[in-house]
Length: 259
Ligand SMILES: NC(=O)c1ccc[n+]([C@@H]2O[C@H](COP(=O)([O-])OP(=O)(O)OC[C@H]3O[C@@H](n4cnc5c(N)ncnc54)[C@H](OP(=O)(O)O)[C@@H]3O)[C@@H](O)[C@H]2O)c1
Image (cartoon, rainbow, N blue to C red; front, side, top):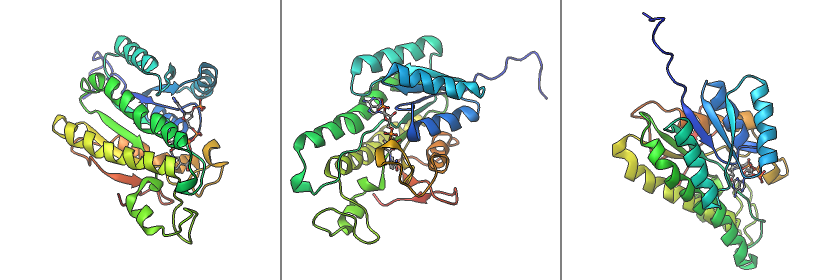
């Protein structure tokens, strides 16, 4: 029986990095639609505030959080702000990412690889480590690392085209981006193993191929469909899977991906 005098349960608190557009914004929207308080991480205040006000217009509890994943001082300030406002964090979605141009490995400038790593890998680790003290105060913390099938070593091994171009039915090799997502998969397994005993579930999830600025708005799923598996992994029940690699699909069921 509901006791009308008991306080309502406090909403779950989530951070989504790179949430001013694309996949991150769609994930932030769906988490807020589930009743969560969502910090919308964005490195640019104007773009972050614009997305915040659009999502809040529909009554969602979405709050702009200045956060550049390559700038440790903004990450530390973001964690401090959440600590002061909520004292804990329930969900972290490491979504912020950049793509690098598609060219053969031998033609890839090494700086492109550095840039991909700095944002997609070092950024993910920086944010995770800064938010972990807050996640440890949650009774059901979940970490979702947004990855890509392009980071799959199995998919890369099956791609025999020496230029790294799309072979029929295969996946492209984009040295900077592919290596960074392979590293995201690897670090996902490491954090999942470290945090398993604490009940913190850590999973790598691909939205599949969805239209965003990063791919000239090409794709096979809508942004809403792409956000389904990241949101599911962000809202797993206790005892749910950890250390997995999955992607969204047309059916909404989701697919396991090969490492
Ligand atoms: N689209 C796909 O088909 C697809 C497939 C597989 C995986 N993914 C992954 O999905 C994630 C989101 O990509 P997207 O396709 O949605 O691309 P997008 O539309 O370009 O969005 C990328 C987001 O990351 C932000 N970002 C970039 N660098 C950042 C930094 N240093 N600090 C904070 N935020 C930063 C961007 O902010 P600004 O607006 O300020 O640039 C933007 O909000 C990425 O991890 C990507 O690898 C996408």
